[in-house]
Length: 274
Image (cartoon, rainbow, N blue to C red; front, side, top):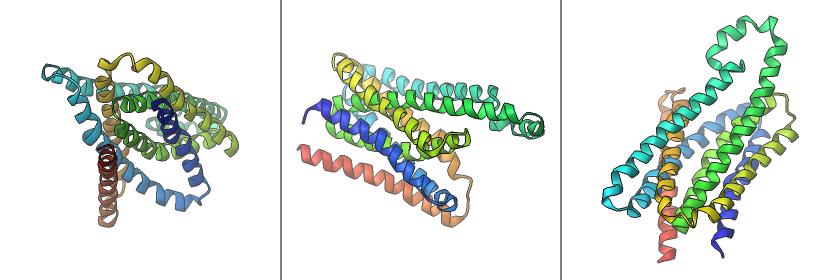
């Protein structure tokens, strides 16, 4: 099987199938969906961190000379800070469109006087989600392709990690689009359309990155920083909303399961190559 075909297949797995899996969650009753989603988030945290620290970062360092270690480490740090700034800009954009949680008190106070403004803000939030998701998925496709161009087994586990963290995110995207006035069928259509940019990013990266072999370690470092940031800044804080012992133990167990699954897949793929 050609490398390009593998990239297309696994970017589709990381994109379209994660949307379809998220759509299945929408069929569940609200109470059941809200109960299941945190378990998926815990698993995604473990998968993302395992791919970053077990696969991407070690592989990136094996491809550079010792005198480049500081530059590569700096790329990981710059990536984490860059994703923070990007997310801050997106939050700032939401706030100025009237849909920021930080302005909740002001919104509640003005609710009766500005219902039409809130509805318009909700629609713009839905549009922003589709646009942002398309860009995010395109970048995911580039990162998956970079991993495949480095090593097939690394590409496989990277695409699985992308799918693992995309499912909870896509559930959230569906909720925002429905709140913005989209029907379920339109929300599904636009989410699938946005997910196809993963395949587009992977395909373009295959033709562009193949000639930029020396840049691959730095793309792997950026992929790792993306996974670390998503896990630590976006997903982990949501787990702290429940602090009872039973829930905490479930979270730890599912994070460990995510780590073990990715490490096992990595080991199986390596043994098959050997």
